[in-house]
Image (cartoon, rainbow, N blue to C red):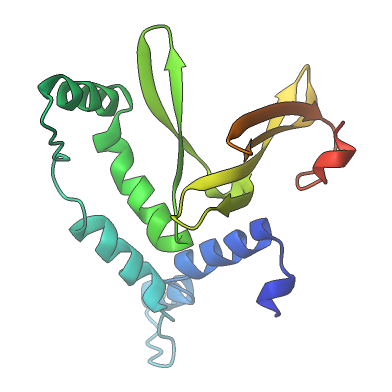
Length: 184
């Protein structure tokens, strides 16, 4: 298995398998137990990944986020955005994604007079580029959708070209990770 030859989606699928493969042979052990057969040779195979990831979920960022600013209106606005985003409920999943994949993706959405964060599945982010300070300067999101009964891919592409933001969205029948120049 050459990790560098796998696509980003394939790498994420492998990480998911490694995380969730915490009880290999557990079903066989339980079956032997319920049948009254003792077999000491059957022991579950456990990886350290699940325990490590869950440590971060249970120990990091516990409690309410603390927002502090000199301007109370700013503090209140950030608190309102976190409430509208259902941040306290979303936080464990986002920390789990950060621990499993090395990052978590959210985008700000404005609907009427509400601004909230929406989590983006890490698997859907097929390419991302950062500047020297770690800010995202280009991102591509490929989402599988059903449109009029047909399986489609919705591709969002966001970038900053010479300090000028650019965004495009395509709805197409191609698979994910099709080069942008082929989308039109």
